[in-house]
Figure 1: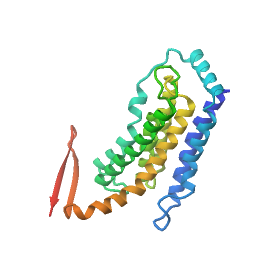
Figure 2: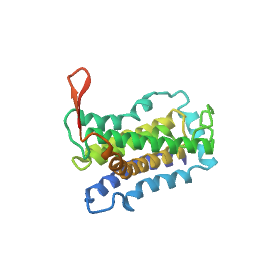
Figure 3: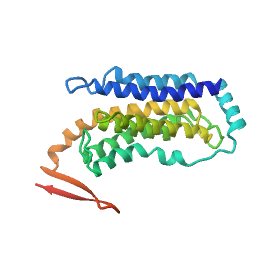
Figure 4: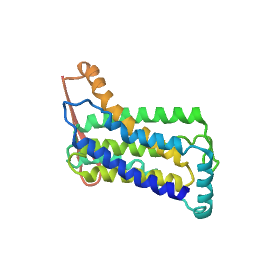
Length: 244
């Protein structure tokens, strides 16, 4: 049963990324910053995660891992979780413009990461669920997965209108991150699903809150601030100009 459920959820991850892309294609500036339709994907992920949080599903997952993947171990998930954010910022460095400037995009990522981490760490402390490998009691939800889906949502928001492949690529990497967390026996299926939903919601919340914060602090900042990233083939530098 677990093997079938795992396949179903993996396919659902990619399906939900297409939902997100379709939502973005039909949006315009006259609509709210976040709509009910945009809540579908994270809502489904979190609701499905809560369905699979039961002990019988966890027992099946543990039995399946012991039987087929007892010696499996990779650190790919540690790096993949950061790939979507790196892509979102890196595209600006190489001259591909997103919906926001390099600085604003960085602010959105910093704010959203704070929202995501606060939610994840808070739930870990409250729930105290034991990991599949019995290493600690902070399994729920998956921080790696939340981080990856947060970055994928930022990437899709900034560049999804330019090409569907930015959206598909970001969510595919995020899905791979969650999958590896389970294959590494570090997280339950429910941890990964809920973590994915939290990551998406954190990104959407950041895009709503950041403009308000910027508006509040903008009058107190210098009137002319610009940052131009520069990549010389070996390192990333930049030129910062501040005018009063």
